[in-house]
Length: 104
Image (tube, rainbow, N blue to C red; front, top):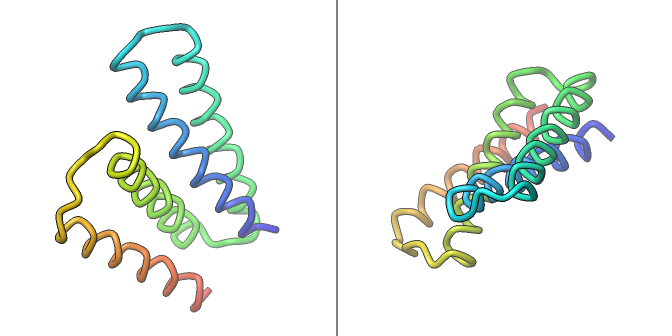
């Protein structure tokens, strides 16, 4: 269950980052509520995950999910560059995240 909490935390991190992008475009109340809700739920699920997963592993995977998710969202939704180097480094983050899961 801790790993499910950790994945949820990473996904809500992506929601929070998406809200930051929305706030940049339009400073509406719904954008700020999405930001607070996304990051709030992200920290809640991260703290629940850390009850059974070591802090270093949980934090590394949480940031990895947030980084990869936000980058992929930027590429596929917001039209950011699809440079081969970005894809290479995203792959490296995913490989490191899987590696941490395998040894935990």
